[in-house]
Length: 141
Image 1 (cartoon, rainbow, N blue to C red):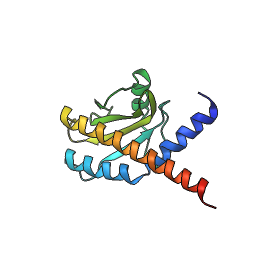
Image 2: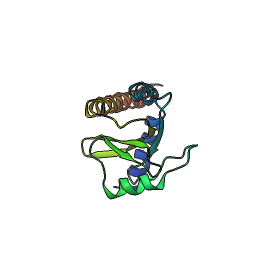
Image 3: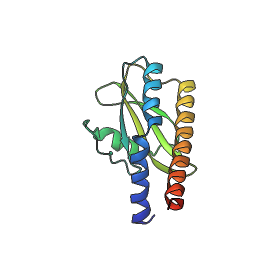
Image 4: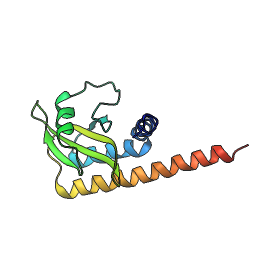
């Protein structure tokens, strides 16, 4: 992949992670998991974290690098708390990962499927928004 495409994909993922769809996902996810507020970390496909205010967890990046995820997966971090990794992908293209940190319980299979479908739909919706914005900017005088 060219450097331009990598930069473009990183910019796309950054905007997607700040979108309203992800904010709603965090709220729904918090309700499912029984937490007040689920903390999330976002990572690029090469497992480097997107800059954020929270401390990065190098063990999570190492685990993701060893086994690039195809589906939603539960795991425990070094502090012994439950975490979840959600790949943000469409077709064969992986844009990055959403990592849900320090949850009270692991995510069951039914809810994992729900979360994956939600992320897929949010990604498609966001892509349509971006395409419409680009088209509008092109057409606008």
